[in-house]
Length: 257
Ligand SMILES: [Zn+2]
Image 1 (cartoon, rainbow, N blue to C red):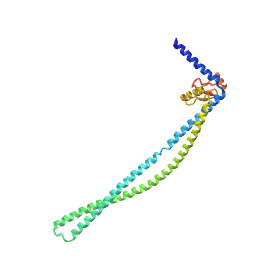
Image 2 (cartoon, rainbow, N blue to C red):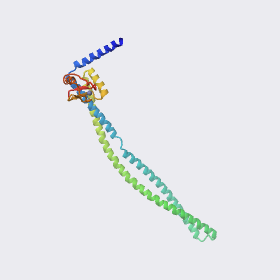
Image 3 (cartoon, rainbow, N blue to C red):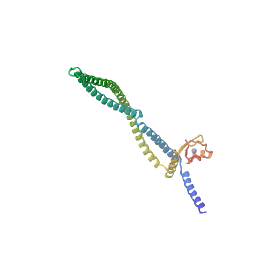
Image 4 (cartoon, rainbow, N blue to C red):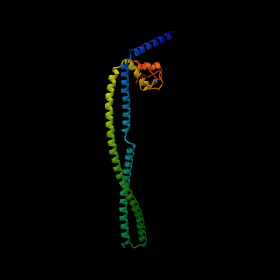
């Protein structure tokens, strides 16, 4: 019993408030609300554009990959260069050793045939090692040259990519600044527009906007442009008159359009 009374009282309060809204509402207020809606839509567009710009401002993946690739090539070049220098030293040492052994072998100082055979064997061994080192050295030098050319060409390409990106980035940053400036004006405009609207109506507007994204929609050919439902003749007449009418289906506020 008590609960029913409370419910009735609540409904009465709600109806009174609703009645107040509906009766005190004027066409100019609806137009004010519609103006507020237009500002909010612009703000939404700005937010979307800003998000897109922020996405565009992320460094392109191709550039990141190119930079990693070039770093890897540089490391490989350094490694090859180090190895080539080691082989250079080894070649020099083996040449000296072979020279020394050759001189000793043909100096005539060693008479013992076994010693001569040992020397000859050792010289052959050193020469075989020298040949292997020289072959490897040749390969390393070719590889080093290839890598050096590759690093130079890729560095040049990377530089062009970075310059292009820098140019694009500057354009994006300029656009971002423009959007932010425009957004600042819109926020101020919204604040001023909102203050011109009845606080209760503004509260209703905000509630619908929170739920539906857009609180005010136009009515076109008797249809709510928010949910596309065909409105009753009575509703259509109310919209065309100076009334605040919420769509019976989606709850959005209807504007005659
Ligand atoms: Zn609707």
